[in-house]
Amino acid sequence: MSVLRPLDKQPGLNTATILLVGTEDALLQQLADSMLKEDCASELRVHLARSLPLPSSVDRPRIDLIVFVVNLHSKYSLRNVEESLRHVDATFFLGKAAFLATGDGRLS
Image (cartoon, rainbow, N blue to C red; front, side, top):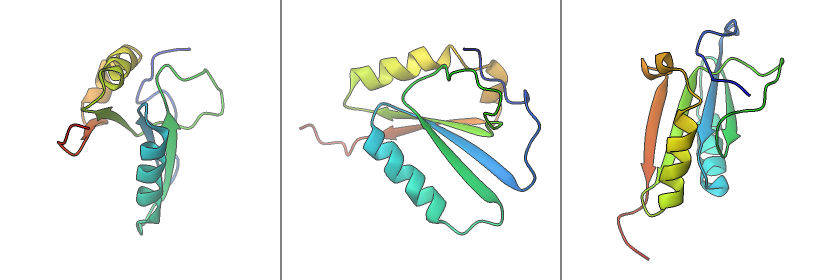
């Protein structure tokens, strides 16, 4: 288990790999499905993770973008993202990381 670095692997030709990190599996899957339905000139790969670090794997693709998904109604979701940030190299935050806040503004 190691820190994710943006340039630790060679990029794939016409391929982009997005990593969605969050605690809500159904929401992550729905977001991934929506992204994959869009017509794109390149091949898009979407991987899901509940948290970081990812297991060390030789055949893991290069990650081009990390999207941290935070549920505004869940303290656990925010804590999970905070913990995961420790396993991301600072250079990822130069255009290769995004935060997505979810929650419809209504308290249940």
